Image (cartoon, rainbow, N blue to C red; front, top):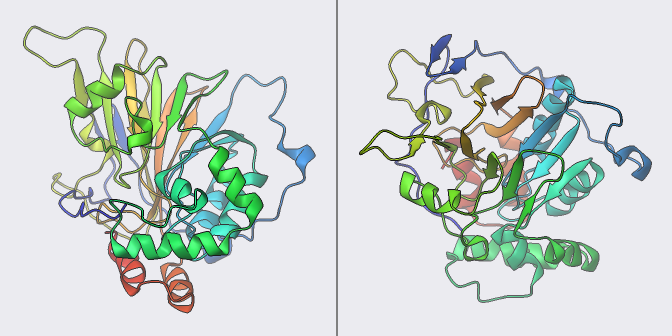
Length: 324
């Protein structure tokens, strides 16, 4: 669903900074040649690495048929040595490459696929789509006609949530307390509802297209809530000393502390809504016990051109450059 999250700002970048366990690193430039063409991987190569104790998992959400953003993200994942992927839903919708994005994601070693609301409406034949605005509805109707029957079946078969075997995390698109109702998590009270249904140390979610993180402490002082928002995960622009550069890539590192539970929204690959147009995703490193959020510039103009060529609403193209 399209919602106005413009009040949620993003942190400006550019200064090395350490605060509350977060490390802000110097931005680095993405070279044009890094946006690689993703080849389909043979089924035999999709098996997970064997006899390995250290794993890196890339967590991707809300790709929304944005091929240029997805290719940029996967190029960075290749550089990082990512072993496996989590897909948090909404691979399709809004943008003009649903088939290509589905094909690429299904070719990867994905430990968990979960369903998003656009995935559901694109695959269940619903033409009413209560709650969707006309632009989102128009994109879903176009996607319904574009996808193959087999792709409809695949999207319809996805679960709403999944506890990922052999890992400390759960994957969900919206929230664990009511995953099929497509509710949003934007404050500590909503996060507390989610934690009541969270049986793993970490839960990764998406849906809002706005990166936000919460930590549930093992013990809280009298009068304190047991859940804190980890504000620096969102990198809000009113933080002192930070500069925002949408043409540069950067990263934020969150150490995972024993005895704490985490609820992490990784932001959106294909349609960010936090006034930062860069593609956002995260990588969990089980050896370092860290979750790192990456923000990457990509070829927005190329995505916009495809949206217009497909006859999709103009606002879906213009919003990408503003991160709305």
